[in-house]
Image (cartoon, rainbow, N blue to C red; front, top):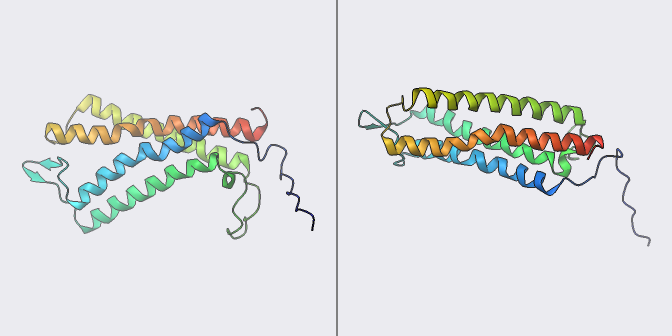
Length: 178
């Protein structure tokens, strides 16, 4: 029985491998988001992370706890989407998806969504950082707790620029200008 021949790429620029630095950067994105999510989950779990105001540990209510955990999971899920810019499922929708399964991911769709996300993330975390620089510890946390908060949230400053770099590489690879 003859060996099955692989199907040709859907488009001449599909199936081009991403550059190694792009793969590393895409894998770094979920890692820079992880510390802030872990900090939030530790807050909900009541762990001693220095989240104390006026001598009382911050204890979110049930609704706040659900929101905080959901925010952490959604943030990490969005960060993991960056892997689509360096993985095959970023070029062809997985067959298991209804309506679009097996079809080519339009590069303009992925590039527009990722660029908009990268710009938004850069503005959001840049603005938040500026607030910390100008206002300092206006939360009233003790020094160690505030330092831990900053250490967990500071990596988020890299999320937007890393995503923009990976998106640019995806654009170049998918448009044939690699």
